[in-house]
Length: 394
Image (cartoon, rainbow, N blue to C red):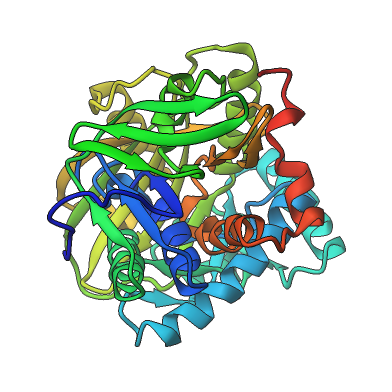
């Protein structure tokens, strides 16, 4: 990974956070001719992006706003895949949302109707068709929906591709550099103080993920983003056994319950299966959802429940050997939409945070929205539902 040896004296824009959203913003700004310095307190892709699932899904989007953003962002990722010379693993391999009970099937059918009403190509298949499409499925699956447009993506390869492209366009990537202060004068930003010195700037993009509230606090602001813990497993390399992403209908219920618990502050754990076999042959199994603060430890309870649900839906994987269990944190808002836009009272401090588990798929559109805002071409229609001041905070 190419990194800067020090921090510059000044920059047009300082992006804080070296995850997929931060590097996407830095790349898009730099490509537009903006002088960018990206600060990351650890290493590029070392936070949430290092524990992301490998799916970029449309058919799990339950709101028209998020679906529209995701569809536009996926189209931008198609362009970036060509621009980056296929430098990250990426394929529109589709996804299958599988139901194992009549109650789950009703959820799937309702989802199909809603998504078709919003123009997404998705259709119902019965249990026999589902097993033919994805042979790892067991007899408990009684029906499913199939979305051909959904994609599989390698998270770390995407992060590095963005970062390297940003660097080629002039971005300085400063790792092992933490922000310690933000100097402001009224509604103007003057500089950013770091562990490696002072950097003059008038614009800061807060792409710090689950740590975005702490960065906002340094600037005297409140940002309503909380960490959501997700536990995952990765398996040994296996011969090709499936293509695309398998999603259990329990996953949709898990997401819905997560939205409720985010508003209530409940620590309840929910679980729903997403399963991808990556190009090298490993299975990536996710994910639990739990508000547990900044605890990134995997747990026996979480992993056990994840394994049990996997075998319920894909019993042919009973002898699959798990190489590693791990957990990551996702930055979540109460309405499960990201915050993208300027802070009330400090317009030079711009949020690009709160993407939950959708940072990969929404990275490209977030970069485009933030860049448009900074260069004076804001997409007000897209930005309005993501505005910081939709919450009753400073």
